[in-house]
Length: 116
Image (cartoon, rainbow, N blue to C red; front, side, top):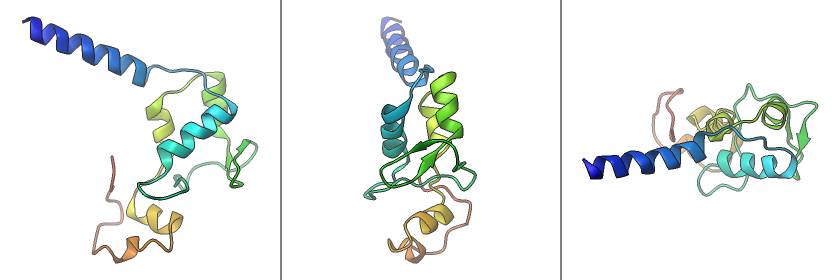
């Protein structure tokens, strides 16, 4: 019983810090987006095709972050909100990293996620 209680407390501590909505703006948000949305061993992030690209935060690479920037700065957001802007489907990896050979990895369904 004590082990279960300890496990529950640990889970609550980690989940509250990971999933708590915090106001994140400017360079801090840009750093989060870059880290969370950059696929393993790549140097640039890969965003959902639905990701808006006007009137937002401009990164050093020239990318612009808007909808998520407004939401995170004004209302707060968490890792899951930021993660929702990323795209790690095979089709996205081909689009974001055209010279990385993701199209040569074998047949995979277009909507398969490589990372969840």
